[in-house]
Amino acid sequence: MNYTITLKVNGRTVQRDVPAHLTLLEFIRSGLQLTGTKHGCGNGECGACTVIMDGKAVRACLILAVEANGCAVETIEGLVESPLAPFAGELPGAVTGTGHSHPEINGASPVGEGVGAGLHPIQRAFLAKGAVQCGFCTPGMIMAAKALYDRNPNPDRAAVVEALGGHLCRCTGYQPIIDAVLAVQTE
Amino acid sequence: MMPLHMEYVKPGGLAEAVSLLRQDDACALAGGTDVVVQMREGKLRPRLVVDIKGLAELQGITGQSGGVWVGALVTMAEIVKSPLLQAYRAVVQGAGCMGCCEIRHRATIGGNVGNASPSGDAAVPLLVFHPQVVIHGPGGQRHLPLANFFRGAGKTVLQPGELIKGFLLPPPPAFSLYMRHTRVKGMDLAGVSLAAAIDRQGQVTVSMGAVAPTPTRFPQVEELLSGRPLSWEVIAQAAEVLSAAITPRATSLRATPAYKKEMAKVFLHTALSRALEEGFGQ
Ligand SMILES: Cc1cc2nc3c(=O)[nH]c(=O)nc-3n(C[C@H](O)[C@H](O)[C@H](O)COP(=O)(O)OP(=O)(O)OC[C@H]3O[C@@H](n4cnc5c(N)ncnc54)[C@H](O)[C@@H]3O)c2cc1C
Ligand code: FES
Ligand code: FES
Image 1 (tube, each protein chain N blue to C red):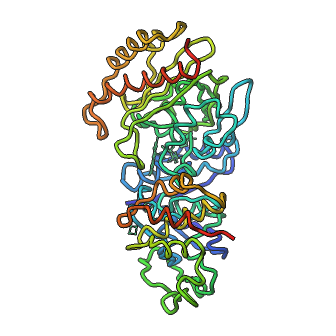
Image 2: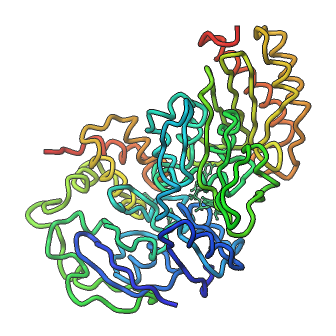
Image 3: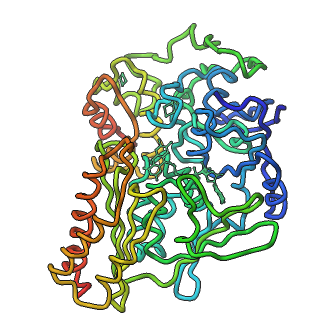
């Protein structure tokens, strides 16, 4: 049985039919083809799937898509204010596909003049501090950092460590990521 | 793999929720941080998932005749921030160490108690405050001390159709503390945990997690410690009694029985030393 859900994703209203067992993570990746949000453990343990739902960082792998009905969801794609948002055009209707394509986003780079132009300040800080290696944990880290800055524009190191505490990174050893989040300039 | 044929309902009222939950293989869904994991692991295969997050009666933290009402849907993040609950420090500490930020935004107190894990980080400290569990079901409402709610690992007294509405906490004790040991500094479940409280009359309450099939209180230890000044001799004696009283299973993933028995002593000692330092228990 399918359920019609209506939610805001990165500011746009989306309406889809989803089965009850589909997770918000599967919906975002396969249904909306927003593959910036990563599927790591699928069990709430790693943080790769972190998105912001109604202002709070949450794990998309632990939420059913039907539960997000009526909610506002922000994904990593929403941080770049550009017309490149992948689902600007026609969205694929099926939500159970594997969703390996990146409609729209393949053609152009969001980086304009100079490295990092057009990116969100947190993304620029990650580039500046070398906080990205393989990049798999990065979208989750950045969304957790964004949720932190949204409620506390001046976090100290302890607040950053707390906000990222449930996020695993196999590459960086965490320090560059913490440094990057602390270095974010908020104007 | 997730149960492919399950259905989902989000009832708007308590009566509807109760009638839905009476159906065979129906399962309440609060924050889903246990339910979704258990479904994916195949341990839980509900035919019907009843999303209770819309039930207003299960929300909120409010003062009530010197104590506090905590709705079942209150999240760990809300507990940590609640001014009313700061006087119940142990449960704030338990909520604060659960999972990580993203988990605490979703995980509810009703879900932690309803899941009935032997080590629930909200359930174990909650026990030392002598709360009543308020249960709503087909037969109306009933109250029950939390200590009588658990029936075994993952098992509770809840009958089909029954829901935890919330918890009634009596006025706060003078002192309380929660401690847990994990294998890693990062996210992990408690390998062993202890909560202690001392009320204004000098009554001591002690509970432990991950040493028995359910979060458990220890009346023999409480009796030894209550109504008298806490001397080092009494504390040492109580620590031995506590350690002897627990029989943790050998198959635990997180700590051996011998280790848990040692940690029981260390935790009790630490908790009561802390009480003395803060000026209680003399
Ligand atoms: C990554 C991760 C880390 C975790 N870390 C910890 C930890 O450190 N400590 C810890 O204790 N737990 C931990 N947990 C487990 C879980 O987050 C907690 O047990 C949480 O409190 C469950 O609440 P929930 O609202 O998500 O419950 P749900 O998953 O929605 O429900 C749990 C159970 O309770 C039942 N239920 C829910 N609400 C009610 C109600 N009102 N009435 C009757 N039954 C109800 C459900 O049917 C289900 O059986 C962790 C989980 C994950 C995924
Ligand atoms: S994929 Fe969700 S926490 Fe790992
Ligand atoms: S950069 Fe590779 S997992 Fe973090």
